[in-house]
Amino acid sequence: MTETEIKEIVRKHRTYFTTGATLSIERRIQALTRLKNCISKHEANIHHALEKDLGKSAFESYMCETGLVLSEISYMLKHIHSFAKEKNVWTPLAQFHSRSYKKPSPYGIVLIMSPWNYPFLLTMDPLVDAIAAGNTAVLKPSAYSPCTSEIIRTIVQECFEPSYVSVVTGGRVENTCLLNEHFDYIFFTGSQAVGKEVMRKAAEHLTPVTLELGGKSPCIVHKSANIRLAAKRIVFGKYLNCGQTCVAPDYIYCDRTVKERLVKEIRRQIQKQFGKTPLHNFDYGKIINEKHFDRICGLITPDKVVCGGRVNRAALQIEPTVMDNVTFADAVMQEEIFGPLMPILTYDTPDEVIRNVNALPHPLALYIFTGDKAFARKVISHCGFGGGCINDTIIHLATSEMGFGGFGESGMGSYHGKDGFNTFSHYKSIVDKKNWLDLPMRYQPYKNLYGKLVRFFLK
Image (cartoon, rainbow, N blue to C red; front, side, top):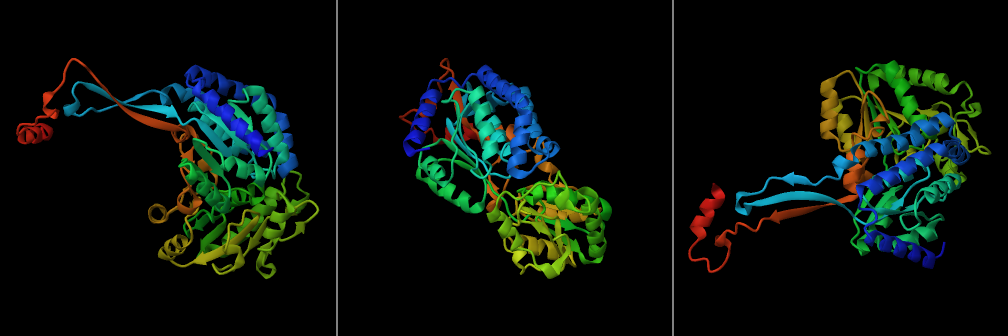
């Protein structure tokens, strides 16, 4: 798509928004209902596209993408009237008689830039929140997941006028052209490197942004943990989507005294969940492309592999792999893995855990497996991270009742449910002053009214 075409798309969106067509709550409900019905209609096509792009099974596609989007739409439809209401606040006595309130209002034209690892979920979820808040939206899905981008385009064209919601496909050239335009809000999900560029471009127009990034999310296993259950849940969270999940446990940080038991259980769980030959498991996905396949393979240290390690370059598959005796100096600990490699490190004291986790950039997620509530409280209180779980992985993002987002290097802002509505809304603070009473003391000449004014405000 050319720069001129992108400029015209943005111009049409701005013209459409200024008509006020998106302000009606009923119109927003109609739009969300159309979207929900259309997604349900195309469910099989969505799952087929995800299978072609990432090798996902239909079950995993529904569990982690389509189902979550439908759930978000249902939540918004249920709560949108409440979210969109003006919120009365207390009025100071000095402003008697007045009504003070906060009014949620849409920003206007929103740019949503999404990644390839959950290409349907991470495009449509923020779109649902943006529509609920009354915005128009330009979607830019990843060029690395073209089949999913195409079904997104089909759904959007069936549901919306082109000046209400539109899709721009392509790669870096289109990204650059979009970021050169003036949007009223930018929502980006992806890598830290690209997130920095998005923020630089947004600053030129003073455009507010939400950045959903990533990081090395630790999975801390305390000596009091239920090791068998911990291994089961860690294996699920780590190898879901072949590890290509922004909130996947990046590494295990395990109490030294239970490491051998944990490794044994993890190996058992990998075989139980994926079979003796995971590369022949029809439901086991693939790495998105050769570039990422080669990068992940380069992080494997063969003499530290205690499970897995085999690859199939033709199919872009890497077995669920466990690496033991890893240190913070190893190559696998220098970047976010974003693949099916699980390094295991050990600690001796809780203070060591907190010190070393905080020495790394703030992660998007943190997981703790423990039966010791005091240990869990200490880690959660002293470590900085976006969100997480105690005695599970991943599931904290699968609810519209809590916001999901990063912290520090893992991002800024949040969405899902009410947090998503708030993200795409500006709250206007308004005082509605009545005409029948007008206190004279604020007007000149003041005539030594300072003492009376102080006493008035101290009442």
